[in-house]
Length: 94
Image (cartoon, rainbow, N blue to C red; front, side, top):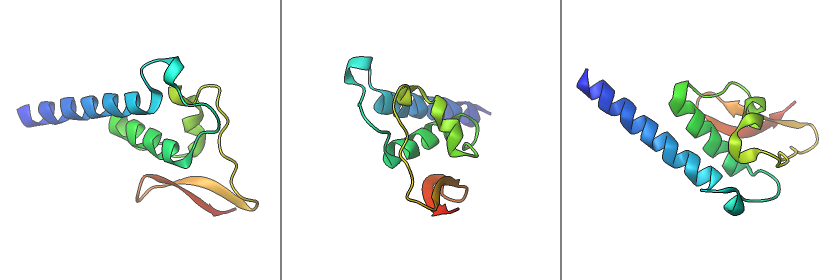
């Protein structure tokens, strides 16, 4: 039981660290411009620790670090999905 609690605390701390690395400490240091696929993958990792990976990329639009920033546009005939086996954002055919 104590191992489970320690593991959960470690997961929460890791999620907090990841969130800070994605969002920055304040808005002045927040990156500007389009959200990158690498940032999408970091957000998936953070959300996965809290209770399972998001099922769709659309869920990431509410991630705090992405507020006011446009999402990347996939190439024509392609779309972004979250690969359930790797928990990474990938490009697939529509």
